[in-house]
Structure formats: C-alpha cells, structure tokens
Image 1 (cartoon, rainbow, N blue to C red):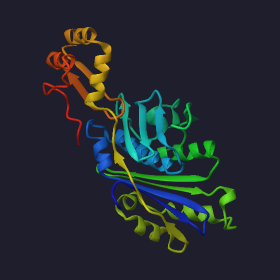
Image 2: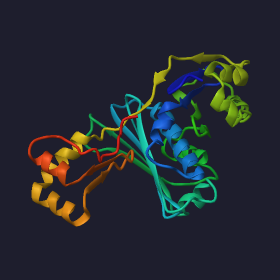
Image 3: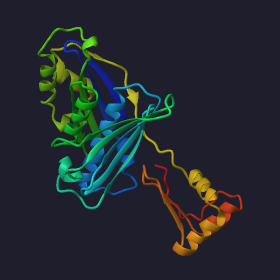
Image 4: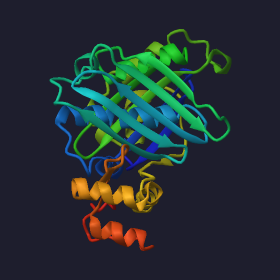
Length: 295
C-alpha cells in the first residue's frame, strides 16, 4: 500500500463511505524516541490509525486529539493530527499490560476523549465516552455510535514497521440513494473477511477489489500523512528565557542540568551550565548534550 497516506472511497451500491490509512515512516518516527513494550506499541499504533481515520470523516482547520486516560497499566494514550495530516502522539505506562483489551490495559474506569480545536471557534469541541469493547476498534466504533449516531466499523493492523486501518460508515439518511436494507450488513460482512496481514501489505486497489468487486466502488485521490511535532530547541530556549536566568541557574545548581521533555513526541532537550550561560548571553547554543530530535 502507498506509504503514509489516507484514501477515501465510496461504496455507491451500499450507501457506505470508507477510508483506508497506511503509515510507514510516520509510524517509525513516532516510536523513534521511546522503546514501547509490544502491547503498548500495538495500542499506540491503533490509536494513530484511529486518529487519522476519524480526522478524515470531518472538515476542520486546526487539530483533532484522541486521548485515552485510565488507572490501569497504560494510564495515558494520546495522538493528535492537524488538518494538514501531521501526526504526533505517545503512550505512558506503569508496566506492560497482559493484553490489549481496553479494560485490562487502561482499567475499568478508562474514558476516550476526542477534542477538536479550530481557528473558527474559541472553545474546542469535546466528546467523552467510556472505553468499551474487547478491542480499541470496538471502543472507536462505540464512540461513533454514541456521538455521531452513525453505523461505523473500524479495523486496525499494527506491525513494527507499519500501521494500517480501515473505516466503514453508513451514509446519513439524507445522503442515501440506494434503498437496500441489507447493504450495511453486506459491506461489513465482506470487510470482516480481511486479515490483518492483507490490511498491512496489499495496495488499496487490491483490497477494494478483493472485498467489493461485485459492488460499485469509487476511489478518490489520496492525501499525505506525516509525523511532525511543533516542539523545538528554539521554543524551549524561549521558555527558559521567560523563567529568568536566576531561576534556571538554580535548577542547574540543584539538578546538574535542566531537562525538558515534549509531552507529545518524547523529544528531550537538555541544558547544562554552559548552555544556560550562552543562552542568557543572547546565543542559542548547545554543548552537545541535547538529544537529536531530527529523524
């Protein structure tokens, strides 16, 4: 499948719209700074696919954030995407969960929160629902059922080097043109035959042909996705300058250095006494102690 892209399609004979997402370099970059245990990595990969798919169902200028928070072994999962297709995200855990079942991994009290921040509105939109189901795909399906009142089905596949996802959604009644009561059941039953390996490996054309060669399918132009984070050395420089030289030097004296971590991509920025002295002399410099964040 084409790397780092989202594809939209329409099953015209079923009144069903769909999307396919495939992440390669984006997924590798997202994990580059942290060694995730296997089950945590799977959950994070599914969240990346889910976020990209959800963003493709709406039009917005800004950011969409998917967050899962609970009291289990994995206590935080957050992925954000911009309207330009730039993704970033991470997971936080106390220990590797025994499985990827949401209740087991995140705890019975876990919630899934979708936040949409746009330039048009001062207040962000936020939807919060309990995390339900035996998979994260079930939880996303439940979110759509509660918040959008639209029949939705999602599928995920995650490997060390790539992530794929597929979303099917029944068109709203006002947009339907086919009076086929069995259309949704047929579309999802065919999608259920798809294996995770096929979802990871096959091209979008091959997948759609294998699943829906007896249906009327329209495939639209793809859009590009990429890993990107807005954090930077310059931003942390500015934050330290805002704190003031005395307070920053006090931290260096107490801890030996100032260490700042991005809460979205796990990039680390470190400053020792030499870095701080250069910074407050008006030079954005480094003694080479900061972790390289370019990948």
